[in-house]
Image (tube, rainbow, N blue to C red; front, side):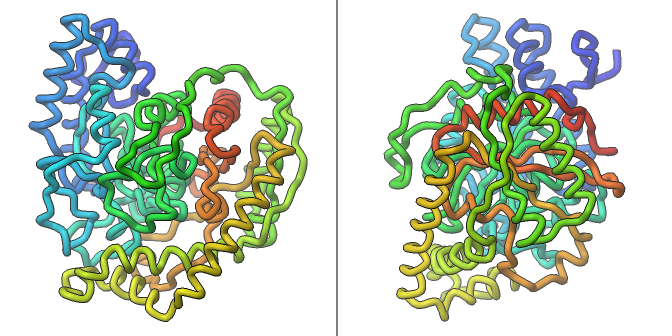
Length: 472
């Protein structure tokens, strides 16, 4: 038998999705230790090239896997994440483990307590294999002057993964873990999901706790999963969603059964198609437009009703998001920036210092405009179950070009729902002639992630894209 190969599933263990792996674990046909070893060996073999991990917690992961194996053997199976290997963006506090934000300023930081979502995943029995790379403090962009190399895109090793949850996106796509947790302030889950060809979900603002997460922008930050499939995304969201009094922005809204409507189809679902974002506001290539047209055709064939709609111009969302985000990220790190500026990377320092000219009046005006934009989107979506538009598109730049790019705060197609807080999922919707993936965004009303996942699942099952894997 080939090491790491499961003949019952007909796949290498790293190729399994969560649903299949958890079913095999529950039946005691695959052990959590066997699964964890397979991922640790793959990390050891490929991560020197991909650079997804800042810290690999091999001993801790094996101890957690052994505990899971004993519990399951004793009949104490906790559920679908029990014994499942995952990775964390290195902004989630993890007790006794380095949590650096990918910043030299915090390279020796070891928190004494774990973030709420980490505790919830530990309660579910998931196995942490390591902490994953990000842009410095989720805001510094691709920077090759940091102590750690920038992650490489597994579809093209010379290219960027998208950020800032860069290590998690590449790791899930390349089979270095079964899922990852990222953060999204302006697209930082959806960008790597799009450029690495996987699923990335930014839940509703307040749906998932940020307590114990190194901040970017406290009024814009979201936490969410990166997975291979929509069903896996629903499974992870189920484990991490819910009110947390430790996060003042956490919503007291009941948690739905996020898998309940998977497989019910989209017949009769009302979809608003937001074309102007990728045709006029931020014009995409013909390949991207073609893939979007084909994707809309798939949804229509599945029985959805589709109608073109418009939201506010992308530039308006982007301007207000930047005016809010910059002062908030500067405030989060101001003390250390002023006391020891040289400990931070040059890109992060330059970008954050741009907050200084923004006045309190500017900030308040941007928050007022944000409320108006959210109200307008709420009113629009009374007529629709979901909106669809293009996901982040590229192609992503070469890493050396991304490192040389000091143009900050360019409009991103992810920003409208970052600013308004609406739940949004990025899903692969095809491939380009270059072999790189493209993506589509699906947007639902606040706290209606069940509908969002239902539509995404129907699209995923009707198309072959999720079956493709990068050539690593």
